[in-house]
Amino acid sequence: MSTFRVRAGALLVITMLGAALLALPSSTASANPGTKTVYFTMTGTPQVQPKRIFLTANAGPYLKKLTWSGWGSDMAMAEGVYISDCASCSPPERRKATVMFSRPISCGKHVQAYSKGVVTVSKPDQGRHQRTFRIHMGCAPE
Image (cartoon, rainbow, N blue to C red; front, side, top):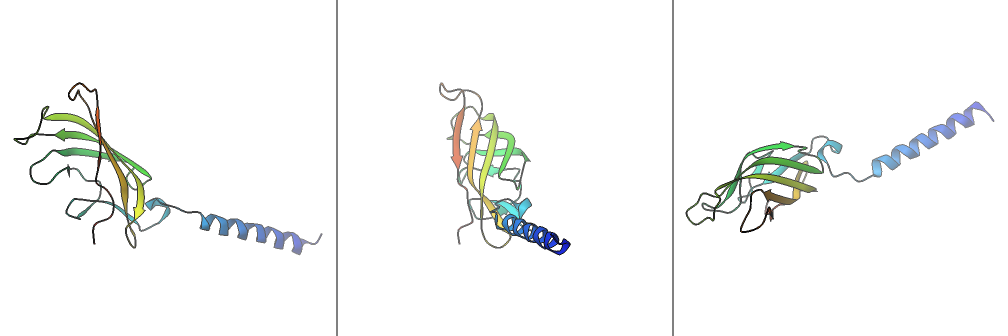
């Protein structure tokens, strides 16, 4: 077999592998350089690694002192504090909280947001050991 055929065959294999890799879907910012991963607040304001998340409007419970790991990947996790200190909020007022964001989606050119958010608060809550709930996620309303 000639050297030309071997090189041409190897080049064809390398080209096909490269094309296959480029066709693979990617959802993370690290796989899409220049893509910014954000969390959209209730008012549609984009935030990167928010330190505070309001769970309801107008003096309801909220999360604060959030410290994130894995931001921009398929799953980001934060630890912080759940605060429930409004006049009509049920006790206890403060609990440790874990927040998990996952399933990033495209929100336009170079912007993605997580589409799933789950909060788990510690300490008993009316006879339960942990309380887990979802929070509103996704792209900002247009």
